[in-house]
Image (tube, rainbow, N blue to C red; front, side):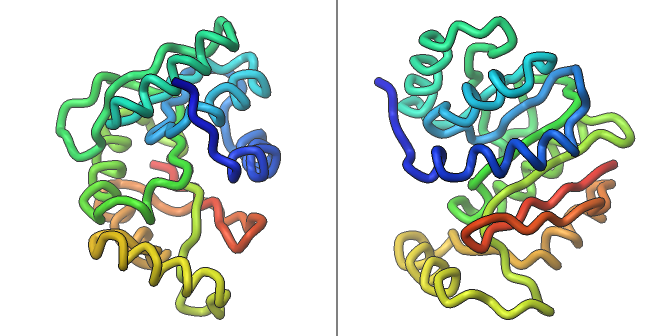
Length: 196
């Protein structure tokens, strides 16, 4: 049942360091597209004052997340919810932060639009929507590895691909957000923080 993603072990510490600066000390954090569930366990352990709510649209992923959650047994780690960001009605009605790790480049653009629309319904003024992954930036030279990765993604599904930060900023503006931070991360990734 439990799935493993090698990248999770490599990037969890770096992601947590940024989250420690951007998340509130207490409250509910909704994690979108939790995948294997390994990040949820890591973050729930790292941030004991936060209620961590994992979610995913994929049934196999939900089973993996549930297995990790049950094994961890943390009081602040909730059972995963089935959540497709493209749907207008989410099973969560408010949150103090929304975190989305490695979804935007392996999903259709409609999922990113749904992410921002849904987060705008859940988050109060000042609360963060935090995204992590590879991005293109007009003013920054793209690493060859990211160009190759983008080509690989698009060959698997033409609706996937690394997104341009400017496109996210425009979408954020349309949904009531503004980018408040850009954090450079290992392996040519970024964490982008948007607040209402």
